[in-house]
Length: 166
Length: 166
DNA sequence: TATTGTTATACTCTATAACTATA
DNA sequence: TATAGTTATAGAGTATAACAATA
Picture 1 (tube, rainbow over the protein chains, first blue to last red):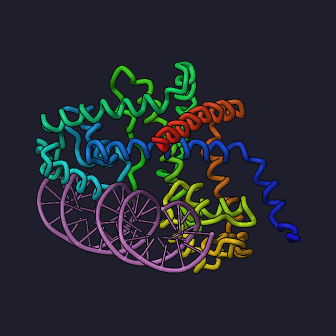
Picture 2: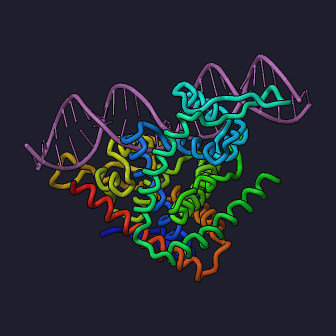
Picture 3: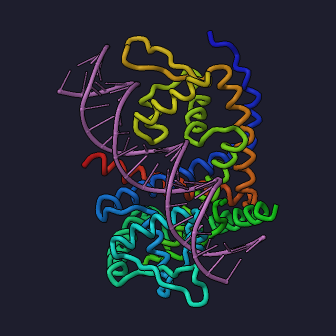
C-alpha cells in the first residue's frame, strides 16, 4: 500500500490558485502549438526561421529602416543576436545596412526590393496559417480574446516597468 | 546586457485578416513575457530550467511514475530530449528510473522524496509568479479567457490530428 | 563616460537518425 | 516487424561579456 503522501496539504494549498495555473498552462500550450506549426511551415516552405521572419516583418512596417538597437528592443532579444540575423539576411540580399546621418556608430537596416518581395510571399502564407489556427472562433470570440489578452499584456508591461526601475 | 524590455511585436499585423494576426501576436507576446519571467525565476532562484520543471510537474501529478514515451508525449518533445533531461535529474537525485513489470524495454520515471520536496518548493514560487501575471484579471475574466483558449486548443489538436492522419 | 554595434563564446532546447534491446 | 529508449549530432536561439568606434 502506498504511504500517505506528505504533500496532500501542499496540493490543497495550491488548488487555491488552480484557476490561474490552469489558465497559464492552457495559454502556453496554445501558443506552443501554433508556434510549432508556424516554425515548421517557415522552415519547410521558405527555408527560414521565426526570428528572421519577425525581423523582416518589423522592417516591412518601417520602410525607412530601423536601427539595430531598435530591432533589438522590438524583438526582445539582445544585440549580438540582431547582428547575427542581420548578417545572414544581408548575405542573402534580403536586407541592407545604411548609414545614419549624424551618428557614425549606428546603422539603419532596411529591406531590399528582393527582401520585400520575399517577405510578402511569406507573409501571405503565414497569414493563412494564423487564420487557420483561429478558425474555430467566432468574430465575437476573436474580439473577446484580443481584449482579454490586452489586459494581460498591459499588466506584464507594468510589471516589467517596475522591475526596470528597481 | 540584459534582455531588452518591451516591444512592439504586434506591429507585424497588416492585411485583411488583421484581426487574426493581431490576436496571434498578442497571444505570443503574452506567453513570451510570462515565460521569460518564469524561466528567469527558475534559473535565478533554483538553478533549473522550464523543461526540467515541467517534467517534474508531470511526475508530481503521477506519483506512480510515467514512462519515457508518456513524458515525451505530454511535454511535446521527442524522446532523445526526455532521456537527456531525465539523466540530469537522476544525477541530482531528483527522479529515479524504475522497471516496468512485463516490459523490459520500458521504465517508469518518478520523483524521489528529495525530488518531491524540491518540486514543492519550486511550485510554490512558480504559483506566485503565475498569480502575479494574471492579477490584472477579474475572476470572470480568468474564466472567459480559459474558455476561449479552450476552443483554440481544441482546434489545434484537431488540426494536428488531421496532419497525423495524412 | 556612455552608447552603438560587433565579436566570441557557451549553454539550453530541440529534432533527426542510427542504434540496442526487447516485444 | 514494431516499439521503448538511447546515443550522437547539428542547428536554432539565446545571453553574457569584452571590445572598438563614436558620441
